[in-house]
Length: 408
Image (cartoon, rainbow, N blue to C red; front, side, top):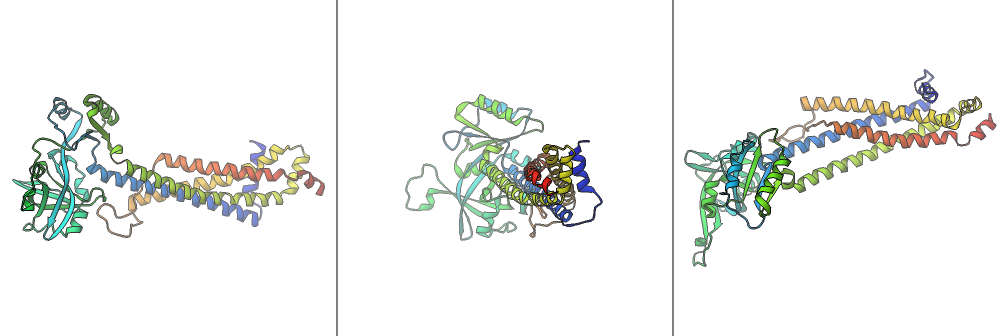
């Protein structure tokens, strides 16, 4: 065993009587322990929130979205789109027609978005998890229904269980000329709401309807606003995106899920790094307490340093003793902290003891998602700060070495 490591180990684990230096070292170790555990837990909580939010977005955000580069709509009836619809890798192929419209319920108006979808939209088995009231029903027999966002429901006070009070949706009539009666310039259709979904403000002002209803309302018998594709498990989405883009040319944009919600991904990423930086500063404070404890240890071991030097120990060996002791303190605190943090995360995942404080349709307790990269990030952060702190303390151990010898 390396002599410096052996002596550092003896200093740290010897059965000597407890005094101030031991207490300070213990406090430093406890600070590293708490900081490491907190960093792992907070990163895992943010991972959990990210996973929940992105899973909710995925209910309305397809894996691939095709839109016209110019204009609001395009004709989907082309040989390539027909072949893509029949591709064995495609799980759902949804035609979407959407536009801003005035939604009225009783005497209250609301400017929202009507989103007409084809039948494949309902292949998503997770849609029901977004429902806050009612059900995700778009058709029942020959009758069409709308599933509305929570913002629409809250603004208009809609009761989804009142079948006698449908919503009226107004859309400008295409090619309409000025008329004495302004209502003649609008197409008006009535539809009953069947459910209310709650995801996020970006989606909660949408009324989802069958595409046939949207075609009638918007007077668009053929064109669509976008094609939304989801694929079977195991499909390489990036490769599919590139292949589709190459085949349909530059007249269309083909976006994956991340590109459709670029602002959301950026926001989640920024928040995660901001929390990481804040907790890293806390760790720096905790770990730099080691400098204080090792400095006191150097003062306490002045006689030992002089004796070792007299026996032929060079400066590197003496520095190594205090460097390795500092690294041992942080290593023990970090390992115990990561272990306790992991146990806490696993218990929270399984039992959900820490609640959000408010009943939510999506989650009740704080979500947790453990990732291997977070363990590496915690170890790298603690290790990097520890090397700096231990290095500073080690340099202090050889300062004034000649004076120590003279004093003794």
